[in-house]
Image (cartoon, rainbow, N blue to C red; front, side, top):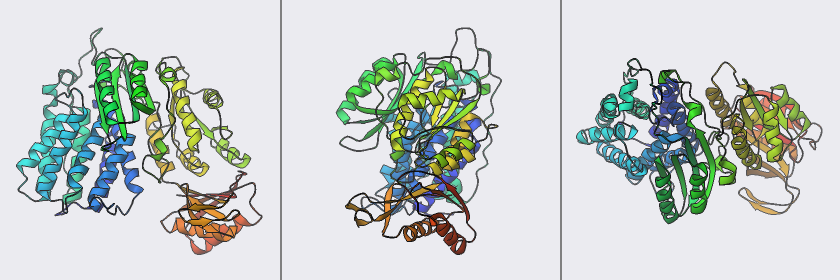
Length: 579
């Protein structure tokens, strides 16, 4: 049983909370009837917390950053990752709850019961402040109730306060149907609130070592929906995007968006001058909403969802509706470098996005499109059932490949930041013809191979995309090449012709011998753990390179499996993946 909440406990809480949300993902999706646009609240919460966990994983030791404690640093990483990867209303609000916790606990030397109670109140306040028109009977209510209960127990130790917060949240969740007629009619509790309760239960387990006994919320029979009746707020589309802008410009944009629709949530990363903002709103005029973002700053990672495509047929219980994943990239799944780096993309104009949600018939089935350079790599990926597009494709070329799959749901693996920007735009354009595209932002062909290896047509498409993103994110990637000019790198100065070993895009080693540097690179990567090494041999690799590296791995790391393939890629004699 813990007396204080340290950085290690924060890491365990995130991992446990994510695992719990995944176990209850379908249950939460089925609960969701309000607001209708968050048609897959469970999926959105899983994706949001996945992004948060990946941001934390990028800094495993969670050492203090000079401005906060170690636990505060860990919480800030979580909050930042959640903000950049937030999906839907619930995901955005969760990111602000994490930010409130980070802001309150960051400077506190030790997190005991009273400190946690204060932080939970700050988290609730941050969540309410993020929503333009807060509604009771929602995730906000549950967060506030958790803070209330924690404050009443604040004189106690950390375990008592944690249990009180979880109990107060559960009690408030049970009352949400009394506060929202939509929930009462459907006989369910609030989906976002249920997700928060599960996260608080996970915190109780981390602090006390006891798994709370929490039953699945029961639902009364759902009454038939009368013709013309809807649980939606009346708007046709959900628009969501990240925005780089100054606070004053965001204030003006918020006022414009408030006049266009509802369910407006605008949250930032806490930077006093500029920074990154997550914007979420329900509107009828997509172009006007995105144009407001263009005027305010630089919008990107734009997502448009048409509610009619998510809504269950008339007279069908809400719990029977299968949720659909937005046609946006899965956040942060493929990189373990800078938090949120895989989210960056060129802005999509309002003109390009205005038709993004146009409906249209599409055939059944799933497909995969991969961007790859090198005949050997292309053959490997095609063997996994993917349509392969040569490196650096245009939007038109990549869109043609998506259509060539003949599938209604397609995963795109770009394997390059530039191709990822193109893929993001293709996702929007493909939606016009009724094709749902999810972009898993892989950075290397070895990650694409890892993602394709876990595809399972028996799973829901949404679950399959998450599994592929997790597999890609779990595959660390590296490459070996020669320096084209003299330069100063993070590993020190290099001269033209030196051998460079890059891990996750950063230079880690500089050498003069290709084999020696490659061997040292593999040793460094396996030093952090690994069971499978994939080697893709480039077109310019000297004879014996792959065999020398393989022989070294077999001798020094006898329990590691090694796969070697002729990749044929230019410029990089060796690509390495470690899983």
